[in-house]
Amino acid sequence: MSGGVPRRPGRVRRLLRGPRPEAVPLLVGRACALVGLLDIAAGVFPRFRHSRTHTLAEVLPGALGPLAAALSLSVGVLLLLLAHGLKRGKRRAWRAAVALLPAGAVAQFAYRHSLLGALISLVLLTALLRHRDRFAALPDPRSRWRALANFVLMGAGSLALGLVIVSAHPRTLVGNPSLAERITHVLYGLFGFQGPVGYQGGTSWTVAISLGALGLLTAVTTIYLAFRPEHPAARLTQEDETRLRALLDKHGGRDSLGHFALRRDKAVVFSPSGKAAVTYRVVSGVMLASGDPIGDVEAWPGAIERFMDVAKAHSWTPAVMGCSETGGEVWTRETGLDALEPGDGAVVDVADFSLAGRAMRNVHLMVKRIERAGYETRGRRVRDLGEAEPDRIRRATDDWRGTDTERGFSMPLGRIGDPSDGDCLIATAHKQDDRPGPYGDLKADPGMNELLIVGAGEPRFVVYRASAA
Image (cartoon, rainbow, N blue to C red; front, side):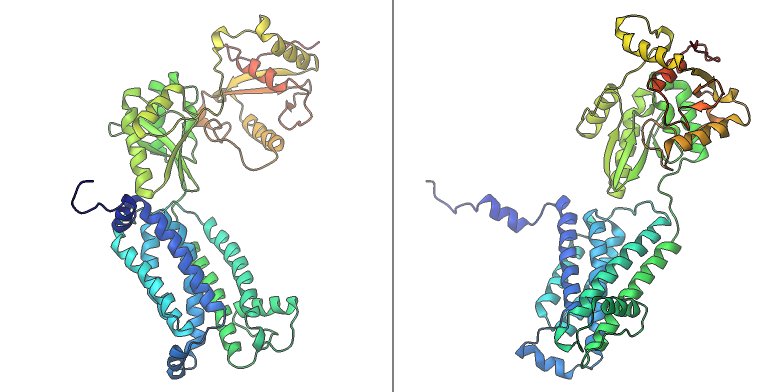
């Protein structure tokens, strides 16, 4: 063994260095959730009086206890709500946590006389201040629906937490109130009124102020979300759509899914040269790109780099769905993302498509069967539709789908018959009474989809009539 000072084990060195910078937001978010739970527990359950701190309680104003309990409870709920934002490195969540943690520490010390609880809050505050550069992510896109979701979730949470508060003081309860009476007491308390449950001593004030704080917290957060400036989750502007159409006109021939980049519930980033673009939507913190980048293949890396920069700025997780083999190679090379193959897609060469041959025998039989049922197909461009026909097709589509949501992301366009989509092909199947099917006809015979695909593949794009037996 060589002489000298022995080296410390690698684990000890890592502990002394602290967490990796990229792991700080996750650790701080978890710690924030823990402190939030401690603050809620401090505000809900009766305080433990210790001999050394009981003397301090005797000299504090009598109303301070209930107010401190309500403050601790409110801070705890807000810290729980902020924990997710801190995990994602959000700057606004950091600012709010820095403001709330001192208030929580004061409430812990004043109500529970817990020096340990106050120190935990202050340690987390120190960590936030020390690593403030790790919390620079911009806020997520938002809409007015967040206010409704907050009202429902906060209302349900306040009701459940209120029941715990009402039941957390069994020694001072007057009688044995039923569950219905306790729920009524909580509902009254959330609106600032006294309910049917009674307590001995000053517990009534503590419960009343705590319930009132929960109700006020629900109202304030909902009002804030309802009236703050709206930033739509995704919107393709007219200028963006015009630029995308120009790229598709020039380079869209290589990508059969390129036109679906024109969905208007997507956002877009362009390469610095403007020769390529990536369309995306943010779903639960995931920045999801659809298909290959649009435009010149040589400009794809620039558009992908801009895409990754936006994801990093907002602390979104980048992902891509529905790209080609070439697109997958470029995405993985430029970003380091992993490529998965969820399924295969088929591309039909319309000019050479035919039902002849043994390989197409099953399709041929399905088409002939639906033809004998009296159906015919029609394929025409959107620009060739009559004035009333687009509305008719939309109504039939809504009846057939059965829901308001059109599922899919990379392939559905999200609209039918828009004048700007004049080159799009509409394929419909009709019975002899000229009623569209299977749109509006959930009992259509098997083979309807095959018939529509064959009709859409007719290369002349004129009215295609299937011979009915």
